[in-house]
Length: 174
Image (cartoon, rainbow, N blue to C red; front, side, top):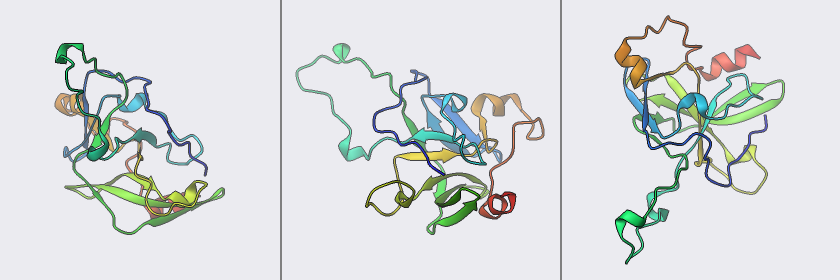
């Protein structure tokens, strides 16, 4: 199960609008400048998860250069996404398929515990690094409602796709 890696910032549909997404239980989970449907999807995986790049740790973010007026600094139109109320499982789960296996670190809703995303282990990529790959999160389709959909009262039964998968469901589906 090969997965593309982002070496440079994603700039496909980034905007100055911040899109917020909630769990099916209405708990706020993430904010992004790129709408979820515009993010690339994993086509080589059963879950068809959306791939959302995450920002670098705060210590490496650039600061405003001295001597340059604020009006002359233009915002960069690149993707920015942030996880808000998700709990990360401490132990990785192994998911198998006909193509091999993946070591996933599951993200769950902070309120109801629904699995809504995951991060992969560095073992899935060429190289010598080990542990969780922190620059991309894979968001499971059907596990999220936009704030707009939630305010409109969209029903969970209204065909929003499959709800997040657990490891047992992924293994059983293969």
